[in-house]
Amino acid sequence: MAKARILILQPAQSDPPGPLADWLIAAGVDIQLVLADREPIPALDDFHALVVLGGPMGAEDLGAHPWLVEVRARLTESIRRRIPVLSICLGAQLLASVSGGMVEPGEDGPEVGARLVAKRDAAEQDALLEDLPLTPLVMQAHRDVITELPPGAQRLAASPKYENQAFRVGDLAYGFQFHIEATAEVVRGWLANSPDLAEAFPAVQIAPGKIEDAVEEITETWRPIVERFATMAGQQAGLVPGSPGRRRLPLL
Image 1: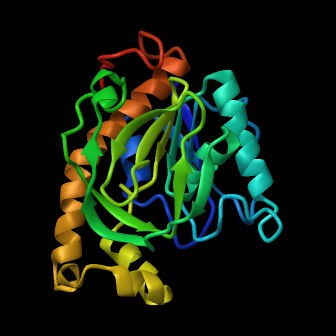
Image 2: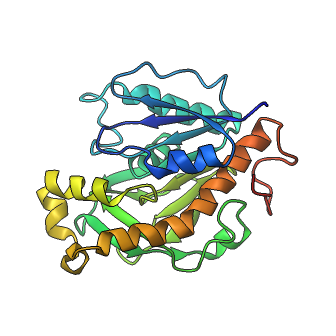
Image 3: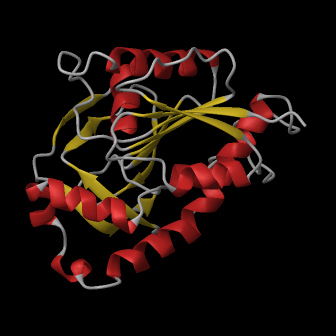
């Protein structure tokens, strides 16, 4: 049986796809996971969607991380060819950067911990996020922020601290500044290796079981969104009726 194929680029060992990969596979697509900092990054010709994950490096730190040039090129090509994109944290910053937005260190310091974001009115008409709750929980862990969206980009979610939390470039390329895929173990790894993030992490959320509870709620909210993204990939492949980006996508 033919399946849509999704390329997942992982920029750092610290930021694996976690359950996001499982959600995509369960939704009926094939994935290829590539460690972008150490493996050749394939062309997009054989893929129907692209996922770019997070990492501690800067979106424009090409000197220290020259492989970012290839990641940025795949994002640019995806936009040009109208291939569905889901980009997370660093991935979202890369998407903003290649599209003409601005990424800078956050003036108010890191944004860390399980936090609520607010769905914007534009998301009510969005093919991917229209069914998202008004104030979904997400996991934050970033120092840099998207201070200016690309020209023509649509803001889909915001937070009180940094407003550009979720956005869309064109009608198929999505950026999430936050994490929806991080397990409790991964979050604790970030805190153990980043004193500034650990200091900014809400103390009340360090209590036993609190991170696990947050991850469970995040999974319940965001897994259907990832399944819908898989449907977009299926439509891109011609395996699901309709065109990627239209409203009321059927789930695989």
